[in-house]
Length: 397
Ligand code: PLP
Image 1 (cartoon, rainbow, N blue to C red):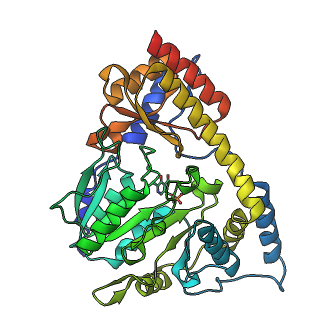
Image 2: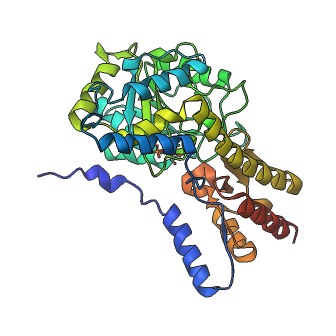
Image 3: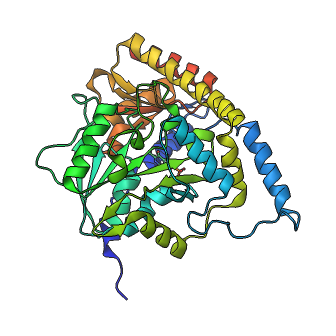
């Protein structure tokens, strides 16, 4: 037996474990200090009532022989018709038409972001932004692919564009971005679509945070961009849209127009899923279908508005302090320049010790993150306000 030694090339990600161990050490030394965390990317609001009701009904279905469900009904996409149609109507509201056979239901975006790679040769060159959501890098490193980085920095407002002379086969785009909160406009996405078509490449578009976009001028789906059906798949999630981080449900759109070397990606993906996956659970699927009902949209938007109010509070605090940041307007993440040219971990330590506030050091997301810091809007309003008062006192003090 030969082991996949590519695993030896995966960099240990010490980011969140170091944040946790530094916090634990500080709390042990200062048990009297109350710490406010604006570091976690997990949601805190309970699920929308309409989702809870739908999942209760789904549980009840399983209790009776007449309504009991076994394996999912649609062995192509693993979606129940209620959910597939709800997703299609959500796309229609964005002016995007997708067919039922193009929507594949998953247990979340992270699985599909990694599993889609089964469709592509290990010889492909991958392009990711730096800073980056670490799963893109690790999943490709496991398969032994070469990874190139597109520099995201203050000059391009953390929205890199394709570079002349750089070839890639697979391109990851995450908009709204984790960790930077930056969002591409139509021209930015069009530049990537044109590049992908020129290079005969595929865009893996991570739309996990699309529901945080409220500016109607900003695209929420890559398929709003002309030509994207020939060069992009879109990976979506109910995690941040509707608080499903613990429930688990997502979906991926693979257009039937995607064809490379005579292979239909849609058919390849269906085949891959049929071989290695047996569908997302019935109960979460019914909850997810309720998310895109009229009532569901209203209720989830109330939760998103709650988080976005937190983002506004953080943004106002940073504006008042004259600290540069991006994100926060159409995203739950605020990406700020550490004051006084501090390094990311230096600012982390100072903020923890002097202000009792925890954020995430930007350097943990890539070399271009050095000197930056991520705050999240996923906490409670009370904690967000408290953290901002403390950050203000720290920066002014
Ligand atoms: N993509 C991005 C950019 C994320 O930040 C996350 C989670 O934080 C995911 C995907 C994973 O989403 P899911 O919970 O659907 O697996």
